[in-house]
Length: 401
Ligand SMILES: *Cc1c(COP(=O)(O)O)cnc(C)c1O
Image (cartoon, rainbow, N blue to C red; front, top):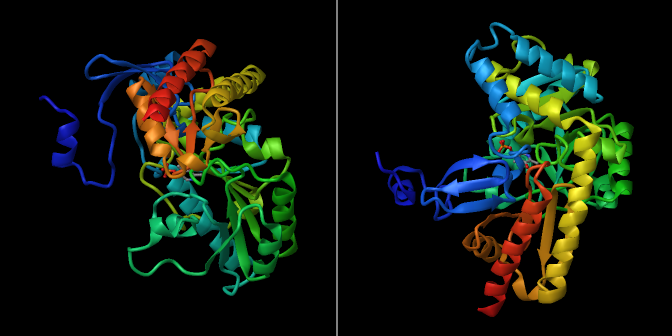
């Protein structure tokens, strides 16, 4: 059967507007479309393909498990899930793990856990959730309402209640909102979708202190920042500020859908048998791939490589900007970087992405004013240099218009 981009408009719900070309194959940081055109991938499936496309280690983990056991449900546990949970708890502050299939589901579990923990330990008056403007936590109705972009949560009827939005990097405002009625504060330790916003360390430390003062749980959404992307396994390790609950997805499966919520023994106790669940959560295929991804990523070599590649990326982006003056700032950390557009190009991030695509480069945007790069953590230096050469060509064509 012949399918093309035009088929999308015929048979797909119109909630997405994908690019004109249809990718069919990937290898490392390169992708090929239906016409055999080759692209360099700085998008990484939106910060997912953490080891590039079809990494041999992940392919063999998937095929090995694929020949053994695909699915059981949570009526039974399975070896890949148990091994992955053991490795995640060994590598982090956490004692316990809950598996889901996506970032939104991991966050949904985190929010429900925080509400139940507060109810069990303090009473029903403690139900307020505080999160931050421009934050993003997924698209289920609870998580999208906790997210800080009303445009995403409006228009679906009455929203889940008792959710307050404060300003990111504004400790003063949070200290006015937070009280003993607050059950949790949810934040990204670096905002991704909201524009690659790196918080001040004093802000993050202050959030932790305010949560302690008011017996509120601190939830770090590391769905985008986690799994080595910022040069540590999780960004909380870089910051030296430990949450009570951490959510991880995207890069966790390196392209296979999986999410996880990590927490302490004390907090986990609130999700007693029967309180929450998922048919696919802890699926053996997903856990086998994620276990392999974790084995490969959680090494000093990979983290050092991420830092070196960040420096190369920044150097080349600054060189481009010296010529074209299109960015005000290169920000972010590790392999999650954003180029903030100058005044003349406000609202035009999508034009940059399209221009890059025309030069055979895949990249992302983070809001209307930031071009985002989330490539593989092990992207070869030659691909960074060649990709940014293509990006520069895209900018040259855009600036000439
Ligand atoms: C992408 C993202 C999510 C949602 O993950 P899905 O897998 O799309 O549900 C949640 N939080 C953050 C910080 C994200 O970047």
